[in-house]
Image 1 (cartoon, rainbow, N blue to C red):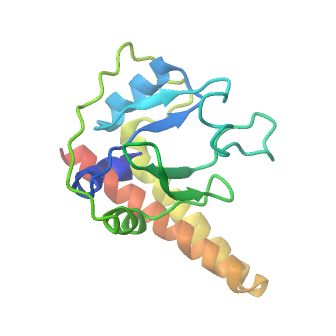
Image 2: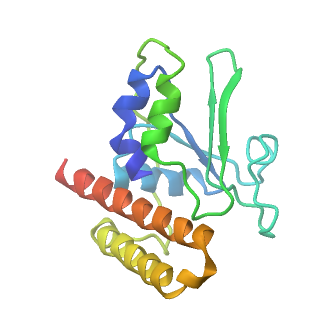
Length: 181
């Protein structure tokens, strides 16, 4: 989320607005919006019936059917113009690719009012902001190590490890920028 917040001005410049959807409660979303200073709302779909299942975003390998990391871009009339649905929770679309895809539609820039988060109740398992950069650095080095240790598994494994390392770097940079705001 922090990396999307960091690039939000570019998403607006491409003519799109942002909203995140997951199964958490509105109060947990409010805590995330507050902690990460998100300039866009988070919407709650606890029973997965409003967006997660209808849009085909549920992880059917997970008994909870949580949403896979996904991006659905739609025009103001609702016509879908781009879709990315990850293979698993570690598979994410890069923000560079996202901005490039959205800008390719040639829409005029738009604006988005800031979210009004309401009552904030962080999850007891939420990673505090001060711990996020070390957390992402740990993920970075774990993926790097596994990529080196298991080179024999071939190019696909190596490419996945490299992509995850790059993802962790992007997230750490976004959190550092967030802390500097």
